[in-house]
Image (cartoon, rainbow, N blue to C red):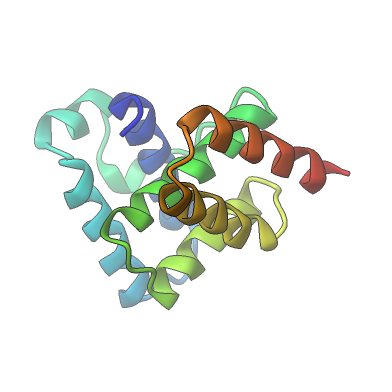
Length: 139
């Protein structure tokens, strides 16, 4: 997986988005804990953010590329087990919309990641395809 620290940063921002919400379902919490486990989030990681997790604040990404990378990291993490559950799609879509993207971005990213593995395409090709998706999203 790409730089684990960047992916963990995306994950903590995802948590912040859900802790800001008035209602968080058990399904959402299950997804969040599952992904934290997949990432190997430790007490050290939590100490590094210097706060109680429920007080974690969303940090606005620097630019559109970073926003897209955050969603891409999440989609990549979801697809690690090659099973995409409805709840996972819902959480990813909420995250993407909070970052200003259309709902369709999540499905497009899953398609890019899944077909890249099947077609044995290099990561550089997938990155280019993802950047093209960003252009389409913003047009």
